Length: 613
Image (cartoon, rainbow, N blue to C red):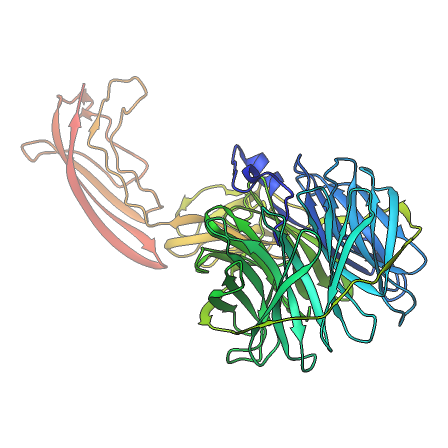
């Protein structure tokens, strides 16, 4: 869906001016009030605040649902939260900033009793979430989305149900909430408008679906409506299966349109994302499907970007367990530029709308944890990642296939009858539980020594911890001290890793430090200065691990032995028979025995050393 919610400059400005800012501005969060909470629509305000519209049911989701409106700051922190209720079940469907700058518009649907006809409506709320006015319309109507129009009006889309089947509906209201016109059209079964877009001349293009045989044989629908609400033409696209368009967005370089939805035609009964480029007259330029293994998948929204690129949100259209939350970006030809699957750690994740914001994109939906449905907000950078936090988005694994749908131009009867009435609503403060899914996993730790000898131990000191994160250590080749699990002993020579792992609800991170055990070469200096200054006054081998035996000898240039010791702690002090030896080059030789990997091993080294007085 393309909505004029932000100036174009907000689409691609991405800034990374420090770790704190990055970590604050990208996130995955859930918001929970009770039993069933869902996000249906989203709005981005000029200062970066986020407005969500949806539904909350504290106890019984079938009788006690209320509209739920939240205002979040750019970091996802709740600024205020309102539950708006009437006499019946009432569900918020979308939210839009008033172009007059004096509040927000919300569309909703009411359900009188468990089996009553749905009555859709719209309300205007203040900057603080208080209800300023509210209207509902009959015949029974369901509203899906809102589109701000260039003349300051709003277009509401959905369907009505006057005669037992669904008729597509587009309704324009003005800045005062009064109806300007309504266009409804349909055939003998079901026709629904999901989303619309307005061109520079004020013509409106709406997408959805039409069915002429049965509920399972839908075709994607595209309709053109004049600025005065007259239905100009309709087109349908698809095959023998269920074909639905849910989003529409313009190409920048020409007058073409991107249609997004899902299909079960073209060789598979599984639902797959379906993108189709059509001209402004409805001619197909190309059509492609996007699928990933073992998942039902459909586009829920499409967002136009500069350069004829698009961001698409996708989830299971039937909201089944295992539904993924996917965002992907395509080129003008539908090629994948990036694709990510996001998890909240529950039974399913659903995205319903995506919008641009400074440095990236924001999407809203819901996440299910057992029987608890929570409102879900995802804010990502322009590359689809979530920098500064531990979310672990994974490649979605989409495959792309070209298809060619059948097309048909058809005419539907139009209907215009409607009535509106005031619908009293009340707003009350709500206090949701806000949860950061991507809790930063602080893995910081240190060790007492990273280079030791066989049989020695190192002590681990934990210097970073995050509440709510599950931690563990892995020490292959090391044996934890029974009395102190953070003291690790190494009986054998080699290179080993101490790895600390941390896991939040969606991500696992690890940090490793290498421990070198007895594999360093013993050191033999090549010069010393026995001048009594306390620095480098003696010459001896530097045995980095304990030795069992040693025999260390030094010879002058004529082969005469001038020093010998079997004590590895002793070295030559530069004297011969108590007198200072002459500055010269001397030859040394050492034979020693060590234990490596539990076995005694003998070594012999020799070289020369310069004595400098």
